[in-house]
Structure formats: structure tokens, C-alpha cells
Length: 159
Image 1 (spheres, rainbow, N blue to C red):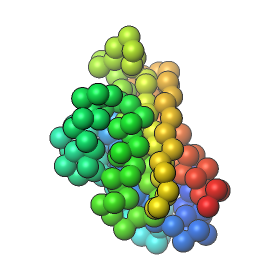
Image 2: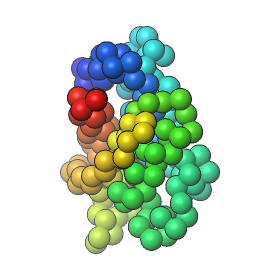
Image 3: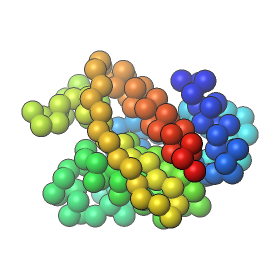
């Protein structure tokens, strides 16, 4: 994961972009990975850890209606997290992660390992997707961070 974080760092620096993270089930792991790199203050703006629905609403502006209609683990919520992170920071690109890492909390519709992601750039729409990762809690969280960081690279490639 360190090599991936270093690629993200180089891409952010090359594009003169500032990353902001909005994380739920990963608890700040994505932010930790990128800030473990020396000089990260040049391209990392801030991270939001919004584990509860209240935190998603208060810190990122996720609509109560979105949470009631789609749930915390949904592409709609992830998109609002990504957009809210940009609106409430000086960042120019964002990533959002919200999911069910387990071992409990899953349902038939959203089993353990379901994780929703979103990425956004200032002034543009947020792109969201859902993935289902195998493994225990740590494995789901690790795969989520890796996928989120890979999504930042993809977003930057298009800028």
C-alpha cells in the first residue's frame, strides 16, 4: 500500500492538487497512509472521519433524507461525503469511503464487505461505485483504502 500511496502523492504534486478524505468504515486509514509520506503537507489538506450518521451530517453536510432513504452505506451518501469534504475544506480532490467492514452489521441487501466509494474534483460531479470485498474486518478495510487511493489516481489521470 505504501507504493500506491507514493504514486498518489506524486500525482497530486504533479497536478498541484490538494487531497481531502472523508472516511467512515476505514476510520482515517486512507489519510494515515498518505500522510505517512514525508512532505504530505504539500498535497494533503485534511481528513474527516465521520463514523456516525450525525458526524456525516454535521461535518460533511450529508442530507438526513439521503441517510434515511439510501442508508449510510450507499453511493448517494458517498457522493455527498465527497462533495461535502470539498465544500468544507481547501482541497481540490476528494475521496469518500463508507461501508460495512464486519464482522457484524451486514444484511441480505448489504452484506459485510459492502463498501461504497466516491471521488470528486472541485467544480465537477462526484463519481461513485460499490464494491464487495472478502475477508475479515481488517481485510475489508485494507482493500477499501487501496481501492480508494487507486480511484484518486484514476481521477487525477482525467484532469
